[in-house]
Length: 329
Image (tube, rainbow, N blue to C red):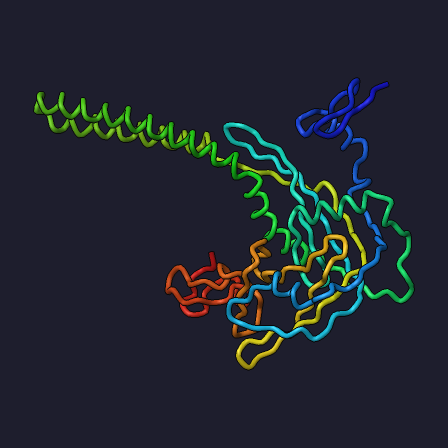
């Protein structure tokens, strides 16, 4: 009855299906919840890197601690890859897709390029196998509460990156309109001042200037409402991806304290996990180790309090500053 074409260059003679077309909505209604969750086991050679220390030197950036490599061993891990669709509403509308990737063994996050590579491997038949090898140990699945908390912290940064060009364009137009409105009402106010000074009627002068100021503030609020961005996000697909890795066991040292950390080297991506920020799950690589519980966090998550300027770990104190009780931003 019809041939549908997907992607940026659909075949000739097909009806193109894009994020803006009605076809996705119709197909979504047809499929319902089928296909949203999937599980895939990948089997591939997973040799250890020739020089593990070099891999660590290029991956780990601890600003106030050191580490020792205890061992490198073969292991299996579980990645959780989530595909979200977002729609931004403002003066214009913008749709897009964003990928979140997570290694459930240690909470390490994947950038979108790495997550897309894993999805491509899952879609290919090259590495597929239906069952796990006997006696394979896997990380325990995350609880819904833990996973939702990770999504709430990790997703906004990724969506902000996607929407940055769109938001920057809105900001330029808002600045232009604000300047135009300011110029108009500033000139109107100046003309009224000159005219009213000639009339020498201070009461009427004050009332008219107040009316101009009210109208100006109303116009400013109208512009802010016009360019305000509202974003809706919904899950499109979640894939539980199981595959072999090389596991690096590290000992993190901060003063006299010690902590074990496990990072996985992925043979498909040929890269080592970046130690996760245990508060923001940011993609930035620099980490600070806190003194209280040796949390690994980004420098921003160990920054000074906005009120008292005392630096503290947001993973230890996610709600308020331990010194002045100021709410965590």
